[in-house]
Every structure is written in structure tokens, then in C-alpha cells.
Length: 72
Image (cartoon, rainbow, N blue to C red):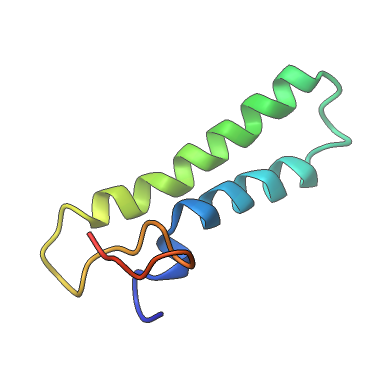
């Protein structure tokens, strides 16, 4: 997978957003706030590979890893 592989994928950002929202599940009572927290963590996580894709270093970013090895 190499650098900018699975940890720079959309799937990783979704899983990380879900996991972080589950960590704080007991502290937040309303489901809308839980959902918003997951969205915020997803956006924070996905912003890194998106910004990495604008650079010319490396072989590119594997957004669809592990389903595709295409790099952008």
C-alpha cells in the first residue's frame, strides 16, 4: 500500500469518523449531535489526503484504497 495508501482513503476517514463518534457516544445524548461529531471528524480526516493530492511528492493519494490501487 505504501505512503498515502489506506490511511489516506475515504474508507479510512469514514471509519475514523465513526470510531471517534462512538468514543464520545455516552457524553453526547442527542443523535443529531452524535451524527454531527462523526461528520466533523470525517471532514477533518479527509482534508489531509485531499490537500496531499495537490502536492507533487510521491506516487499520489489512494482515495479508493483498498478497493482500487489507482492514485490521484
